[in-house]
Length: 86
Image 1 (cartoon, helix red, strand yellow):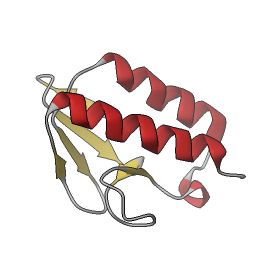
Image 2: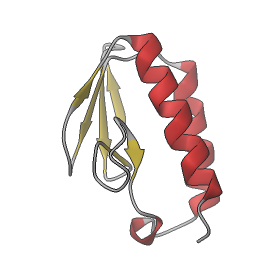
Image 3: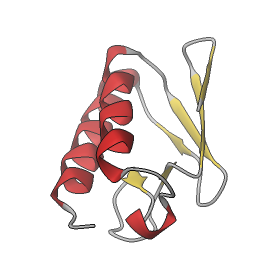
Image 4: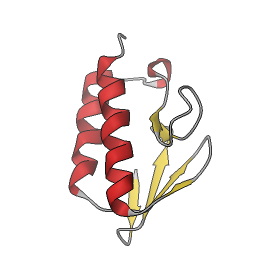
């Protein structure tokens, strides 16, 4: 992923929006994780230390919200990803 100017997060194939669960922000299906789902969720948790207002995924819709709302959406997405059995 690439965070540009603390506003735009280019997420590649890691995050998307409104695909599987209809949420604002979602972690891509674990079937697309080629290495370690556990490490991927740990990496996503590190994003909580940054502020940004846009997620720009390779697949799915762009998502924009104020930084505080984005943090809440990311927290929910990470919790859901950690609960998934791989």
